[in-house]
Image: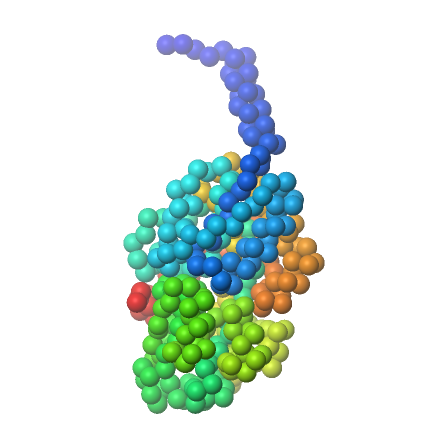
Length: 325
């Protein structure tokens, strides 16, 4: 058996430390891929493309946005979970990653397989209806839904995602039974509501907002804790006294994670860069124009949000009896 002398041990530790320092200082030295696990054209992709260019400017390397849709976001998410943990593959994470593991057996775990980088934005959902729906406000919508159980349909961008969760939470608390119709992304869901194929959407404002302003959809309420600056005339659900839901609140988020075991110094560099970007006035202005609330929480703060939502949504799913369609 060979024994390592104290001086040799110190030398080896110093070499290891210098190697880690050299790795962090040289990162990044090649393009970074930013994986969006959803089809092109959705609000989530819009936020990624907004921050990717700014991160590229700050990091000195291209940040290339790549869509890898399928299975409600699970294909792209699993791809990043199994990627090399070197910081060169980022994942657009949504609150859906804290919902889906409670609904299906997946090959990834949000608490085990990822390291949080930071939040980009959060948002409440707008409840928007096709003009043919016989309701001009939430009180009328709920009355109609209760009188016609199972008749109203609402779309989502995929089973088990944030939009599905928000609608089912409302169904549960309001005592309504509206039917879920999942689509493969926001773009086909938007086409469906505009054509009258479905009656409602619970969506981020990116898709519905232009159509609401054009009179093609009618906005009935917001699910967040405050009204949207883009739709100041639209009340929150908790404001509609007739619904008797004074504590109702549902907000989703978009953030960035990397594969677990990515070097701490690389995580730190990516986190600082993301926080710099989301604090830029022009980025904040564009996010707010799309209906998002810019966020700057990074690393441990974002990790705490993921852990809290994972626990909270698991409890809600059990109570609601929510299932994949």
